[in-house]
Image (cartoon, rainbow, N blue to C red; front, side, top):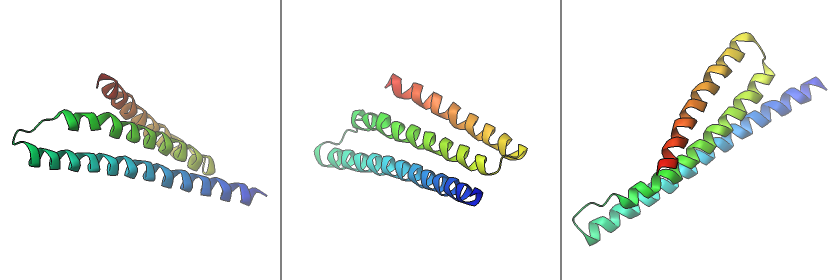
Length: 113
């Protein structure tokens, strides 16, 4: 019975990690597509570069990054449940702290936009 729980946690952790990577890739793809559309319009219609369209992309991409980071934290917590040793717990704490700090400041920047 214990093996099934470990296998379930491992698969859940890997699945959530893949999901978070997919969220980041979707955000990147949407941001890149919006950027390319903006540049194409700028090249065709005017010689002056307007940054309004690009600055509108930042909150959208930032929200995808925040969601992806949150999913990665969940994945790390599940992975640590499989190996609850001190070095794993310290690693989780450091990674969680870094991702939380990045998420906090990214969230503040998004709110300003």
